[in-house]
Image (cartoon, rainbow, N blue to C red):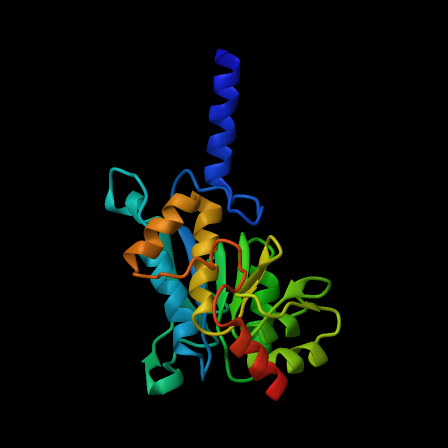
Amino acid sequence: MNRLLNFASIALALLIATPVDGSESFPVPAKGKIRVAIALAPGAQMIDFAGPWEVFQDVHVSGETHSEIMPFELFTVAATREAVRITGGMRVLPDYTFDDAPQPDVIVVPALRGSDELLLAWLRRASVDADITMSVCTGAFQLGAAGLLDGLRATTHHRFLNAFEESYEKVELERNVRWVDNGSIATAAGLTSGIDLALHIVARYFGDDVALQTAEYMEHDSSDWRTGERTTNVESKERAQVAL
């Protein structure tokens, strides 16, 4: 009987710690922070990186010190340390350049204006040792240009699905989803879907309970972070794709 109870306890613990889409959990560092790098360039879409930034900064876990309770360390990285003007006119001073940024555990690539070889080279280099590299919206085009999506599944903003499919024939395009996770490379659809993907990544580190607590703290009512399936507004998105 005790053996059965122990087995049941272990199974329950694994169920809680593993996101429902079956992705493997990431190891949490015994010491130090989980580093999250936000790639910036002129024209970066505000919510694409601000949404995931908010998710990671709002994660709280058990610990004795403030540093332990807030496990993620966030920073921005760009081609230079000069101010980057993003959508809406805001100017952001990057923390690092692609040459001197510390190795991140998580890389976030928002929609950016054009492609920069410095960015692509950094993505190829930094993604090797990162736990996961994620794009939001047309940031998927940056991952595609860097060759990181070849042979993988991916998605992007619904208005750019056809253009993405034509540009990257080696990528299996997914439509009508909020995000796609290949293990170490993930892509989110447009704008707010980056919040769902970031919550999914939180779940891969700390389990669904912590991700849910973070979503509730943010007043984020969507549950699409659990599976990546789009549970709302599917029909309108399909009509928009047909119109394009």
